[in-house]
Length: 407
Image (cartoon, rainbow, N blue to C red):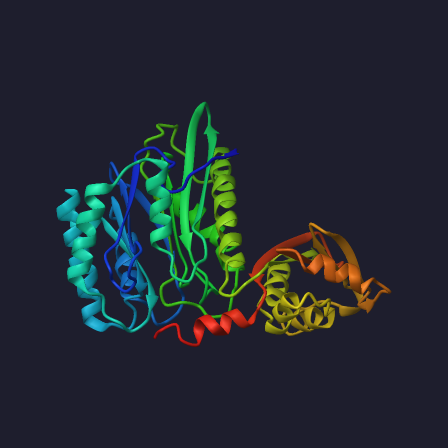
């Protein structure tokens, strides 16, 4: 497997575009298109929030009915959530307009929206944006990157990833783009991720690969504990690579899933590290666990702790907050057996042993915690399982962004 430059246009047969439609933002692109030269098999995972945005409902229906999509239209600025019948009408009209401009079936258009909840999307601007997208779509690298930038809201940087690998003797590619900075606490936010691949897969292999991997990637990140109304992860496969069909449970399936995991984990870390107001990616690794589930629960609880996140922001080795977060996680463990470490590019430092503080250097701890990527390692010394979760530090910047986000 090789990581390559690119995003959603890296795989054969996929094109992308960005357009400035003025839906809410001015002076920047705010609509994106992903287009496949042929219909795709598709898989998707969506928010578990009972309040689901109209695009989520639209996409769920397409995925559940096994319709083969050929395009995705995404807008930023307005989430099209809590918009009633008008919101679903916008999805329908968007699909019709895109189908007409792209020469495809209206039922083959998936939709994504992100931004402010409760506002109605101006359909006239969407239609103008779709015209621009259809006219400018391209398979080049720059078009994929432009699409990744167009779906940003409070994100500070675009998020892309792509890998190539072999199925037999055939080269296969997975490319992706994502957005998300706040309201990030997926449970499959305003998190969107779109993945494209030219692999030939069975429908079962495609859907199982995504649903299984989401549990260890996007569902292991948290910025602020809020599960969005719009969380969507879509994976499109157009089969252009021409490889021997990948079937569930085969070695080829494991190869595909390994590549998919790399892409998803890469994007998940980018999402967590670009949390609103964040200055550091905060990773929690739990090792020595009895079960994978125990490790996941403990790791997620650490990165979700606001007190711990604030301590990371202040470069303060306040390990008591970490043990506290582990203690209320709901997972059983013996706190008197826990060893705890801080690690970053500045080094690794053991903070506690058997649940008790060591005589460590506060200066070294501060140095380690001052780096842009910080890891806490908790060894519960009960087994051989491990898991990782990702979040970010909590700064005043988060409040500055969200105190007047709507206005």
